[in-house]
Length: 244
Ligand SMILES: Cc1cc2nc3c(=O)[nH]c(=O)nc-3n(C[C@H](O)[C@H](O)[C@H](O)COP(=O)(O)O)c2cc1C
Image (cartoon, rainbow, N blue to C red):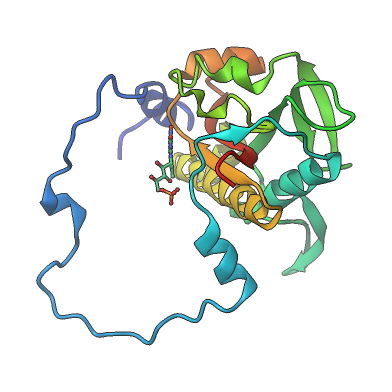
């Protein structure tokens, strides 16, 4: 185990040294692509897909062209609620927990949710922070999704997305309890919340795109966060798919 002066030091060293690659190495060697390629396969019965969740899962796919349409505030509320909304109070082993729509190690919820919107009925275009306690938005600044194209490595797929969700991690919220292991938990939890957004988007007839490729410094600057104790981790664009 490497010794560090404070729990954040080692994860931060990794975090700050994991920029998007300048070029992608293609193709990935075949040896990396399949585990136990020569082992016999014990066949399973087909997984029934005639249920709502299986249907949502199988209809989710990455959408890279959105139509210029408007969505309602209720739709935005449902997407945010799916990611990290509070759904009640839970009692576990004598402790009272806030129940949310995604799991969190120790119930610490290190993910903060920002959303940049450009076509939501009755809401000014710009960047907001979502506050699950009270289910509302804090105004941050006037940055609309298309202004994230440059930081997103020129990925202009999001030009007409209604909303760009930016999931950030407040690392110490997990690291105080779990030490360096907590860094993994923060990343896992961003994944849980992103998938919830993608599935809710399908449910609402919308498309989504997860984006992990972006310039950290620029995104953090737009959000007004320090990029060290609190940093952008993952983005999800949502809108009306252009090919529907
Ligand atoms: C962690 C992660 C990061 C991703 N980053 C990007 C990205 O920066 N740009 C992009 O176009 N797609 C990105 N994707 C989408 C993947 O390319 C896509 O999920 C994959 O090709 C499988 O296709 P599907 O989503 O349609 O099932 C990302 C997906 C994941 C899970």
